[in-house]
Length: 156
Length: 152
Image (spheres, rainbow over the protein chains, first blue to last red):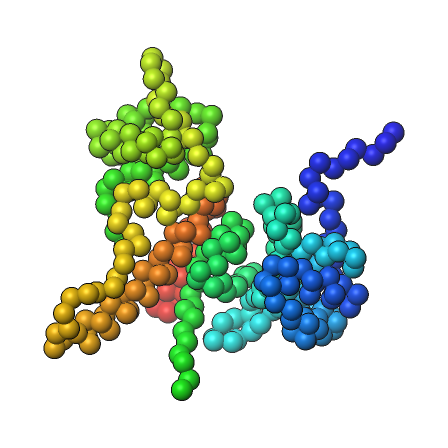
């Protein structure tokens, strides 16, 4: 019997730890979404959170090296700003035409599963105030405002 | 922050109806559930109908049904129908001796407004209903109460 075809393209995409072969795809997807080429940045992110299996860092991709359709990067951080150990999500991206199909949620759930396995019971992130799309995404995953306020000051 | 009654009623009604888009409810049924004025709510529902968020079903057994997309509509979309949001805070009044302090206070208040606006724009009706089902206010209160007991 022929395998039933999955009607949702996002469901068929595998989520797995990133390898160095995925970096070109990550950089390309990031450029497609942001308009910026950040080759050095993504190589550094991979070196810090993907290449070394420290148990606290996490760089997951959705897709294959020929085409990356999404990624998520996070790490367990402890005692910064007085915060007990918690999981932080630094970056998440999904190809535009695959959004609202559950791929972002799957990536988020995958990184949260890794945080839970590390004994962590809280996940945090930060969003730009005018980035309603990403803000809405994290809210849709169940996140609410945390106990910190981001402050900044121009240095002259 | 405190909403006007109309805004509060609108949020109750829209969220109640969006929770089950196939269901029809009358203004009285919604008002009874939330302990609010059915007369005031009826006016709010008419405004929501004009904005396309709800459909009025006429006749015997009629009522209102949710007409929007709960994943796209945000709390801000409902609020801005009844509140004056996003007003230009540029002050063109003549400069006075106390202008610096006044401008400083406007700067701080603008920070709060920006934060509030971003939050309300980020929460869709669908996300809001999921939050209600999860009741995070109940689970987050438990560690705080434990800490308070330990401190005594």
